Amino acid sequence: MITRKRLSAAEPDQTTQDCDDQTANRTADLQILLALQIAIFLSALDQTVLNVAVPQLGIILGEPDKSAWIITAYLLFATVATPIAGKVSDIFGVRSVFIGACVTFTIASILCGCAGMYGPIPGLTAMGQLLLLRAFQGIAGGAMLGLCFITIGHRFPISQRGKYQGLLAAAFVIAALIGPSLGGWLVDIQLWRVIFFINIVPGALAALLMAKAYPARQNLKDGLVKSAGKIDFAGVVFFILAVAPAIHACSQLGKSGEFSISLWSEIAVVIVALVAFVHRERTTGAPLLPLHIFKDRIVLVSLITVFTTGIGLFGSTLLMATILQKVVGMRAVVSGMMLTPLMLLVAGTSIVGGFM
Image (cartoon, rainbow, N blue to C red; front, top):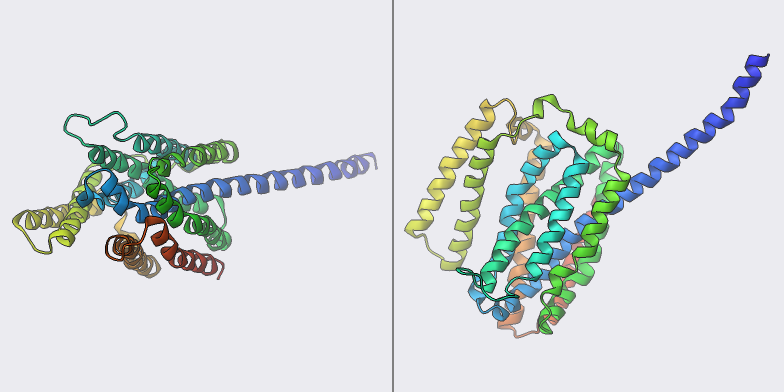
């Protein structure tokens, strides 16, 4: 009887402890989700602000012919960084790599805002400095964006991942609402540096939230993957040689409209590097990008869909901003307002699709 009474007396304490643990887990989940939303917001805002600001920004910096590379340089290095960040997170854990990406993105944003502030660096104009720093920012941005979805996979059960990924799109809605008009307004009043400086506080906040809420134990557990303990450096090199010349060749073709000898040379490099990359990933024990995932029909169709819609979204917004400003003669802020409905529709359907 005494034993039973002692057990009965202990039961409320255990129940209370369980409730406290559940509450703590829910709080941590909300903080992690907020950190991911901030990271998505920064990534989206970087595009929605700059897509409108780029044409006028090229004129301000005195090299309008290179203005498209403000976007291209970022996307190029973000593309390269995304799979590498995923591989590194397998080794060191999601928490550590995400925090590092947020801190790096914040530092890169400060440097981008300071481009040309102290005059030209030997061999680099203000535009050249900005393009170089945008490439640096793209590395952090690509890692940060990819790790948002990796974190969802590590932290939340399969049945809830679609919902949480849909919630991430809420951050895109906010960026879509304020981004185009804000970018146009800032370049109209010659405060383009603020476009980059506004990333400082949110970037630091996302890193702090992740450091506080994401369990260090889970981070270590995530990182202890024996088969993924090595980085395929040869695969990284082949991947870069396949992606970088391909994006540069597309940019040059869009500018000149004809195939030159240098363009054909870049295409040849892409083909050789792509063949080498596929061979490497098939033969190495710890591939950068396991090719067997492409046998999954859902993955393959999803990647093709994202690829084609990405071309439509980024291409159309940048092109429309240029047409509205340089052909129609609109101010940058007005052209931003014209693009806001498109961005809202994209973000809204992302949320609905996630919940469905």
